[in-house]
Length: 70
Image 1 (cartoon, rainbow, N blue to C red):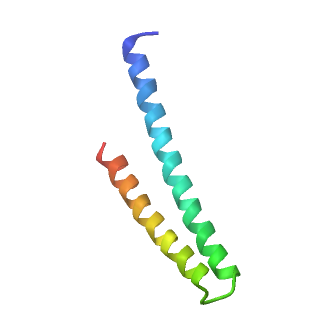
Image 2: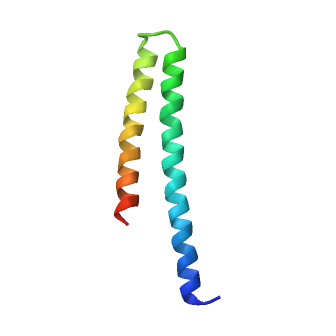
C-alpha cells in the first residue's frame, strides 16, 4: 500500500467517524424528544430532558460546523 493510499483511507475513516458522531447525537435528541412527549407533560423530568435535547442540538451544530470546516 502506498503512503498516498494510506492517507486517503485515514481521511475516509475520519469522515466516517464524524458522520457517526453526528448521527448518534441526532438520535439522542430525537429519543429525548420522544421520551418527553410520551411521558407526563410538564414534569421537571421532561423539562430536564428538553434541556438535554437542546444541549445535544447545540453539540450537533458544533460537530457539523467542524465537519464542514475540514
